[in-house]
Amino acid sequence: MSVDTAVAVPVAVPLAVPVAVAQQQLIVATVMPTRGLLGRVAAVLSPHCVTSLSYRTPPSGPATVEVIVPTSEAARVRAKLLRMVDVLDARCVADL
Image (cartoon, rainbow, N blue to C red; front, side, top):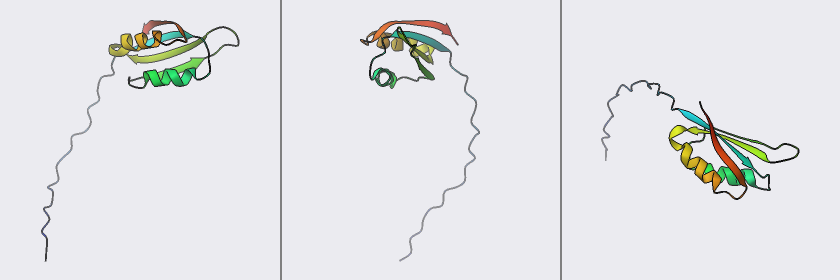
């Protein structure tokens, strides 16, 4: 028994059009360095479009978390960071 299979007609695929880069904002949070903090920060930020995340701990004093996110998500990300127990302060520093 033979089975006829329809053959798809080749279709031209348009080239990808470059999308304008969305405005981004830098958020700097001052945090108390505790065990597992970076993992908790990453978990809180996982639903958001985070472009960059850096974590610096000086020999003494509080640590710093820097996050770059689209401007449209900056207020929500800042609010989530401020709700974390280890976060002392979070502020939007600059538009990028």
